[in-house]
Image (cartoon, rainbow, N blue to C red; front, side, top):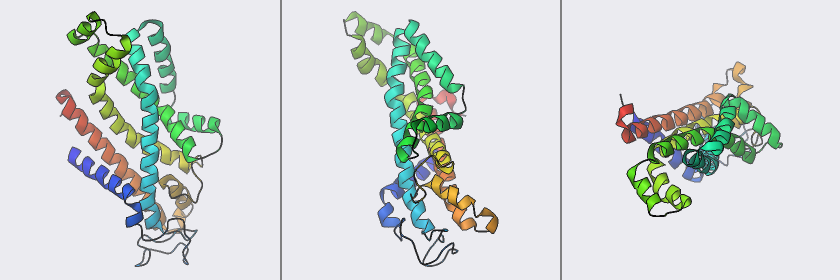
Amino acid sequence: MAVVGGVLVLLMVVTALGADLFATHDPEARQDSFRSPPSADHWLGTDENGFDVYSRVVHGARASLLTALSAVGFALLLGVPLGLCAGWYGGWRESLIMRAVDLLLAFPSVLLAVAVAALLGKPSLTTVILAVGVVLVAPFIRQVRAAVLQVRSLEYVTAARAAGASDLRILFRTVLPNCIAPILVLATLSTGIAILDAAGLSFLGLGPPETSPEWGVMLTKAFRYLRHSQQWILLPPGLAISLTVLGFNLLGDGLRDAFDPRHSS
């Protein structure tokens, strides 16, 4: 199944990188027809604004991937140092950091993302990235802390301490490289979560403007016409989100099994 996930992710990446080549129309250019069904000119039809659905789905892959990777990168920048600090130093630092983690994990991820987006104010792509990134920080802190606790008492770490290496040098030159595998697995799984959460925020009107070619925005507009039997507006972005999230989940599970055979079935 990891191969299937890898293929889906690869298709997503290729589509995002080659969106300008694969799109048949400008995703933000209004066409002559409105809410027209799929045809030779418009492979997936057009929406209520006359935008070509296929071209917007293709360009939506770029927007969704950029949003997800940016959110995961933000979570890594905060979560990895805090996790290293909590696992290495312990004491009051660990207690403070882990209580903050418990607080973040006490809220459903979507509810927390909505709260953060509301606090940030103006709906935009940056707001979505920061809101989703905050949601993803807590799992990274827990994962990195657990990995540090496993390796900090090993012989090579003790030898580095005995050699007089500073804490920062030990953490980033000795401990962190041995935590890369679980971090990579979590980052892969988190990318799928980020795409889903970002689409949810856009669906709720907390993301980029309605003219933006983004999957969540497309769902928001398409949902209005679901009862009018115009599924060609709703199904493409919905399937794109589902297949992309499935791909990252399968790939993440495959990486986890490869790095730790105990998890494999």
